[in-house]
Image 1: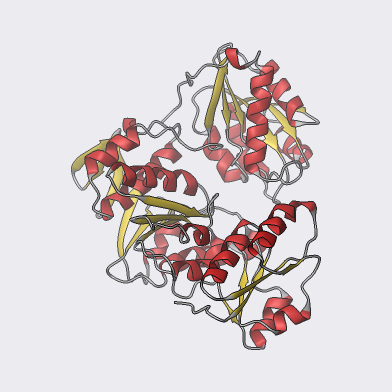
Image 2 (image 1 turned 30 degrees about the horizontal axis):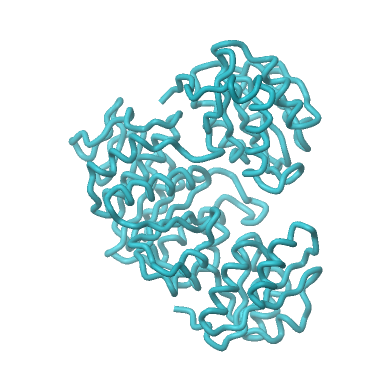
Length: 461
């Protein structure tokens, strides 16, 4: 446990996690202070929240005095712990801590934690729904809309806490320990922060660094980098697989989901499109099984689970064209799994702020699946250059223009898929704002709300 009573705690980076952590520190007798290098209009709501709490802060730079007089420094998830002010504070004797450790100090519920490059939100949302279907209460927090620090301040703690955990959050953990943890997959992402895939994987495997034989580690057997994490584990390992039997876990056998030789569920129980969502469901089911929950109730919850906003989310059907919002697609791997989710030809909208990826690795898939590509945003030209030889490409100035072009290009029986493969920050505050802007534009342009119905197209599983 990290003791914060009467400690001066400097939180570096101003955002919703910083505000929640400041409130938690304040509640437990510490003296929080928030420091942010920027001074932009985007910080206004967080400044207002800190003002309401009476928590002091600084913007527009990190002052030396702030870091000279602190006991604990906590980088927000988006802030590298290796920036100069944090290093100087550590040299002066301050403890460099993380939000996960501090929040976990005040969490009374056993934690089920999920990390990985893609699929975390769908897996955690599904896990929460299945646990609640068994009559338990379940908190959902972490790398989503509710910071862990905010969740542990609830007046009544839930029976279970389900956490979505990023590699950033795991970098500095000292004693955070999930009762059941899962790593879903690894693909190149956040390499500007971690430097290499090896360092990225090392951050992810820290999820299990404090686990014991009473805990469970759930690993993806089909991802060699993830499955390699079993070496040195103290936790009991369980696996899941789409491709092969696993001795201790769940796997897909044709359309059957098996544990050992026993059929315990079906791929048809998963409503969401794409094999990647069957993998997400397998991960959640494996964690659920390890937790000893009521299987029949959990399975019924799975059958009724509609998915998560902005993750290959069905928007509407217009003139025989099904339209999907996958705004959470911020890298090429998420675009790949989105394209692989459909049997129909796809009219794809992609673009935004790129991450330096080589889009051409997707050329064969784009040539096979994409009937027309509409590019937009900062990396629109790079996407156009990458795929011009594979499919018809047009460029849009705005998202509204991209929607208009895609609706004009799509034919009955095809799919319009908004899967940007890029970050949103060139035009939007976050992927949620981008996804809602896309859906609003679709509904305006597809002859209004009345033209949209709730019947999705058929998708491969």
